[in-house]
Every structure is written in C-alpha cells, then in structure tokens.
Image 1 (cartoon, rainbow, N blue to C red):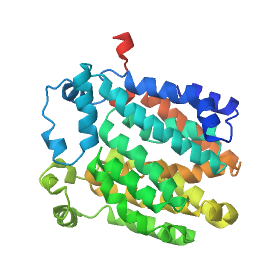
Image 2: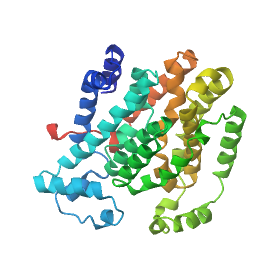
Image 3: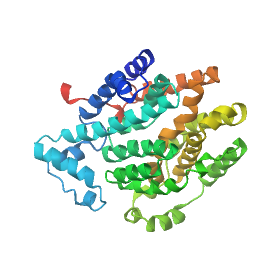
Image 4: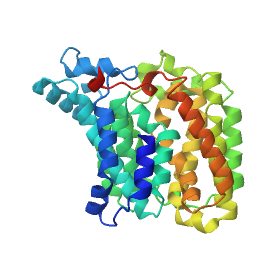
Length: 348
C-alpha cells in the first residue's frame, strides 16, 4: 500500500478543483479505507470494539465521557447486525478527513507523493488507526481543524474540535488553540527552539509525577491517578523517538536560518511542529502525555515535507528517509506485532 499510494500520487496529476482532486486520488483513499475497514485481529483493541459492536459489551463508560457519536455508530452496527461495520464507519470518517488534509497540503504547494511516503514510514497515524479507532477518528479531525485555523476559520475550527470530542473526549483540550492563532504566526529563532528542547530533555529525567497528579486531578483524567498511565516511558521507547527529534531539529535549523522565505510562508504549521516536538519530549515522563502527543505527531512531518517539496538539503533528507524506510520495513516484517501485523477478514 505504501508503494502504491506513493507511486500513484507521483504519477497522477491531481486537479486543482476539490471534486477533480478527490476523483483523481480516490484509488489511494479507497485502498486505505479497505485496509482499515477489513482488518481482523489487528492491534490490542480489535476484539473489544468487535464485542461492543455485537452488543456484548456495555458502553456506559464511553457514554459518560460524552463520546456520543461513537456510541451512535456502534448502535448502528448493532442494529445492522454486522459488528465489523464499526471499523468501516470509523475508517470512512478517518479517510474522509485524510482527504481534506491532503487537499489542504496540495493547496499549500506541498508535494503529495512525499506526503504519502511520510504518512506510512514516519507518522504514527496510519498504523495506530487500526488500534485506537475512537482516538484516531478524533486525531484526523483535530489535524484538519488546524488547517481551518490556519485559514482564519476559528468558528469552523471550534466546530470540528467539538465534533472530534464526540468520538474521543481528549480532543476538547485543543479548543484553547482557537485563541492562539496570532501566536502561532510569530517568528521563532532556532536558538530558542534548541534551548527549549534541551531544557525539556533535561526536565524529562526528573520525577514529575507530583505535578502530573495535580493537573490530572483538575481534568477528566482524575480516574487515571492510580493507573500505569502515570509511569515513565521505558528507555527503549525514548531512544526510538530520538531520530524524530533530530530530524525536526535539523529541518528547523535549515528553515529558520538558511531558508527564511519558506519559513515565513509556512510559519503557522512550522510553529505547530515545534510545539509537537516539545510535547513529544515531555511525553517521556508520562505515558498519558504520550497519548495526547498522538494528536500532535502529524505536524512533526511538516518541516521535512517542506524541504522535500522544495528539494532542499536533498542528500541528507534522502539518507534520513532511507533510514526511516528501513526501520519501517523491519517493523512490518522481522519485528511485526500489534498494529504492524496486518490480517484481513477476506483471508481469514
């Protein structure tokens, strides 16, 4: 699918109009929809969601979090008597918003075949969509909402975030960004970015449980106070995140110091990528923050996509992309497990 999506988007000449664009790229979106909706036993949550959609599991805890749209989709799957439909319904929404996101990237003159390659080998979003279907339905929506905010459409931003919270309540915490649009357009010098990263890295070694417990007690996550979600990310997990940190920092340096015109053009999205990097580092101290970071992960791709689209620093980026591709291939072959170990109901 990675090869197909990347190659097709490279060869296809997606038209400028929205309808023409979606028609042209529909084979890519349809293949992703099929992969997500026809999954079988993928990840850790598959059978739990299947039980819910079969009416065998109580959804009271989801209703209590006001995730009403997911409950309605689940009730629809129960009414139709086909539990597997819950994966189709959520996949359809996810892919629809993916299409809207890709359309915005095209409007911003970013290269789509590089996006699809990064989508599979660099981002968390595709493979994690097999597992946390509620959260990742919300993730796609929140990502798209930031493009609306970038365009100055604050009311639509708020509406989409509220819609996302009806699938996964965590999305509601992104509403304050509606008031930060101007701040996200401010120029940030690279030394400041580097200083914040180094400070957060040093802070990540400290025990922040007390601080975390205090803030969690003020939110809807107070029920997690005595859970494993307060635990630190393990050493291996932290080490595997460093290539992403290095990539974002390298691209940030080049864009902020060597290629300021591009930085100005994409300032809003670049600042989101830096915030995402900061959240990633803070997540080393708590697996709960890691779950929140998954909403931000998409934007860590932005600096890389910009440089690739404008053919800047090609040798370094091609080497880095080859490295990520190798890691990806190992994840889906030698070390395949969880959401990286795909199976379909068509071949069961």
